[in-house]
Length: 208
Image (tube, rainbow, N blue to C red; front, side, top):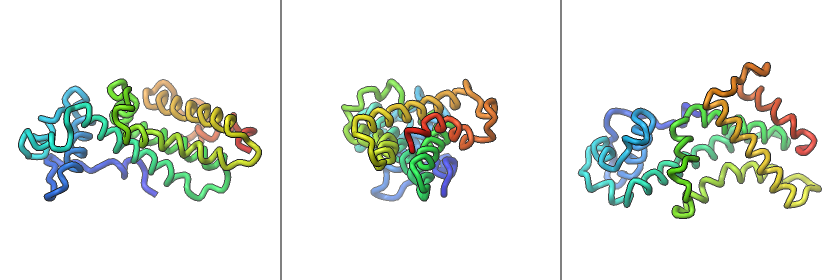
C-alpha cells in the first residue's frame, strides 16, 4: 500500500519529457510550482520555462490558466480516489471501509495541502465548465456512497443523506486538521486512524 507521500510526484529542477508526453511533464511542473511557489506564480509561461519548451507549447494542451488549473485539480482528485480505494480494500464491513476512506482522505489533504486547496477552491467553483473534472471530483464521494448503498434495509433517500453527512464529517475533519485548528492527539487518539475511528463511532448504529 502506498501512502500519500509515495503518491506525490517526484520533482527535479527540469521536467524532461519524451516525445509525445509533454502533458504529463506540464502537469508535474504545474504541481511543483503550486507547492513551492504558490498559485499566483503558476502560469503557462512558467510551465514553458520549467519544461524547457517554447512559450507556445503549453497552449497545445491548455487554452488558458483556468484550463490548466482544472487539469491539475483533476489529477489530484484521481490520486485522492485511488488512495482512498487502496486503503479501504480488504475491510470486511461497512464501518471499517468508511473509517479507512475517511482516514485516507485526511492523509491526502494533509500531505498535499496546496493541491487540496486548489481542488476545492473558488478558482474551480464552476466545475460544470470542465465535465471530466466534475466527474473525477465526485469519485471520492461515490466511494463512500457505494459502501452505504450495499447495506440491506436502507432506502435510497436515506443512503444519500447518510453519504452527505459522512462526507461532510470527512471533509470537515480534513480541513480542520490541515489548517491545524484541531490536533488529533488532543482527544486521546494516537494517530489519524484512531481519531477517525472515534468520530465514525458516532455513526455506528447507522453503519450496522
